[in-house]
Amino acid sequence: MDKELLAMLVCPLCKGKLRYDREAQELHCLYDGLAYPIRDGIPVMLPEEARQLDVDEKLPTSPGRMGGA
Ligand SMILES: [Zn+2]
Image (cartoon, rainbow, N blue to C red; front, side, top):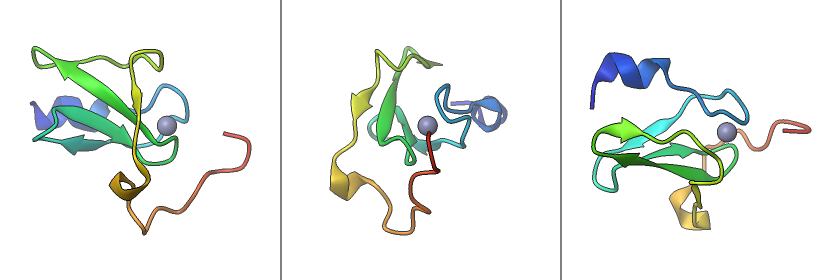
């Protein structure tokens, strides 16, 4: 996946940066705890298509939920 494209992508919910999971082919929003799928190299930035991340998939260093998000 293109690094420049990745840098442009933000979570549609919180507008936060996403973490690219190369093995899972997903983009993770650690703030919302959602994983957006990448299909055929194309990120699907739809909350209804995203899956919930498991707790242990979230970074312990996560700054936590931003109020109201
Ligand atoms: Zn988010």
